[in-house]
Length: 244
Image (cartoon, rainbow, N blue to C red; front, top):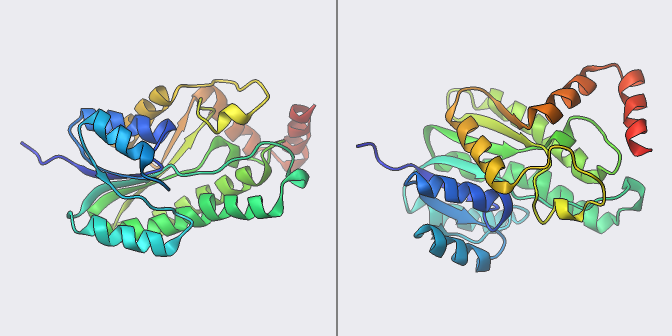
């Protein structure tokens, strides 16, 4: 009987991360759960029958280095996935600069720090998954700096896929709208809105298959991919219509 996978989930305290932990726990995986604080992680661990809890903030390299030492003591990882993110809706020119810096530090720089921390902990050929967003496909109205950071994560994942070829299986996750505490800040209709459980099922299935990007729901992601492929003269004109 094959040994259970050991999987590190960053951003596991709620939303998609917690739902993904439940999916993998149901498969018998040995989970390492991380978030900025351990309160919600403790409740989740009790619910799923136990897990290693390692509180850490991807925006804090020193805390991540400490987390790496604790995780390494338990043996190599088979997979490492980060879903940690910050989000504020609204127009880019209205965003507080300090808040913008925090979003960049968590979403973009934090993804890099997570990759630098996780890859040495992976078994040879282990899986590293970063979470972008369909919001990163194109600069859309009210995307603010969040969309810019997710575009950066997409680019970062592409770079790591090339640089780590043969060493790690790098994957990119690009969800559409998922009903979490982040999207609940939105005051507009969200097409294709999914539950965290449905999103987690898509992610788990996608990470088990070959390929690079996992994106869903297709009825939202494919039109946005088409929009991204258009010349700017057309794509930005169409984006302005969304603002109206």
